[in-house]
Length: 384
View (cartoon, rainbow, N blue to C red):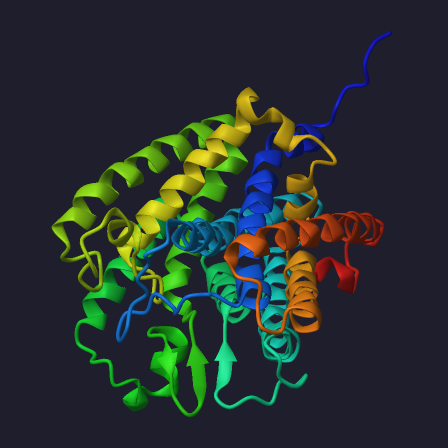
């Protein structure tokens, strides 16, 4: 019996499921990091560009943190690629570029509002505090930066790929060049400097994710999205080339311990070598994290990891419901830690609870994906 012929859209969508698989994978490791916060209560200090820097004597504690560094660069890169693919599909269905821009502006604003009114209370409540968003200083985290990068990136969505790559490199290089002119006295920062360039705590804001450095990663993703729209298979091969090149470049740049690291290596062990500045992302941090992410993406596109890209694989389900997963997992792990382990479990005993949380999130995300797909293209639920 002849098989039904798939449409071009269905064929391209099937070839792009590795993007969802990668997103799902980095969400798993992100959840591990946040289970460490809420359940183990042994999360290290942030890898900041100034002040004290985390050090490790326990390889498991380092691994538990280090594997999660794949998440933030992966999120911003995948968002950029996804923006291009979304815009291309909507333009084919008749939407104007103005309508596409309006969609991204609204979604970006929603992400920033979710940061303030939904994510921030989760961090406070899960850590044992009251359920409130009226925290001073105001916490400025990843949803804020994703929303800001989405709004600014949308303005450049139709620019030439070479221009996008040049701006991306300029933002990442410029961050390190500019940061050398600042001291660690963050109380002297203006709100604009904090929100757009340099993380730190002042009386007004507690910023971990300023927009401009992460916009550089988003623009790199937008450039890749154009390649995916043209030829997915060739784009996967490019992901491998970039991934291997990034990992190869990371080693000498980290060993030189100068420009590209933001601050000198703290310690001489292999852990210290792999422990890079994340806030804002140093070039070595991004080379290592994106190098692994892009290499994994290629692996997901090959038969060796084909099982991970089959429906309804947990990676695919989680990867297709990223915002729902993100909000839900914060409150779930916060509830587990606050209710059962207010003093923390320690890292080894946290791992089973991390897996329990994922098992609980899977059916919720599956149901939400089914509900979202049943909504009209212009439904408010399509923004989540």
